Image (cartoon, rainbow, N blue to C red):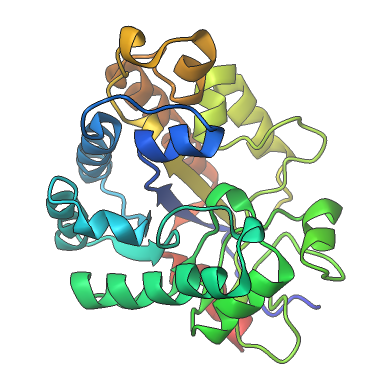
Length: 286
């Protein structure tokens, strides 16, 4: 694998994963007892307003089954109306390596087809839930016709789980003979966790600044938000436990999170040019 192209100015794209409260609880094996999904509702509404105020456009990674939820559908349509891009976060948000080949195929293929048909947009990108993707799933992403995947970190661990020679820190073709581009998540080196806002809202904005300082100069950046970063806190009595409050970032008010996210976005803008995701991988298509 070789670097396919460079830009004089370092570029960054903003992504948002649309995991709602029910998805987070399911991922951790917790019982979800809330009515509806208030985290999804407030998180997406607040995120859309946030990006309007900040005059920024993002790529939103949609879980396709949410299109069948009458409460969620209008907000998903609003993403398109406000000029953001839409990508796939699978059909049901299950961890791909735990599924059979046919189940993986449905998660990868059906999500793309359904989102495109129901929202009337082209779906170019894919991200696996929990960044959990194996070689078979990555090959299915390529087969389904996605232009890019954004599930891997440039680590030996991620290279091993996908049986790749390596995962490069910049957009590249991970599969020989395939057009699929990998738009990798930022390397966090020896830091214990990724430094995207969800972790940095818990650990502190110093952690985000440290991650940016350690990012290789000239390497394009994916700035990944989650709905938890913008949502109103879930009621303690409904979710219970300090751990659940931290995982859902429900120990902070939406106002506090919004202000911290604003500072993180401003910090990125200081050193990077915000561009659509397509701009990050176009140079790697040559």
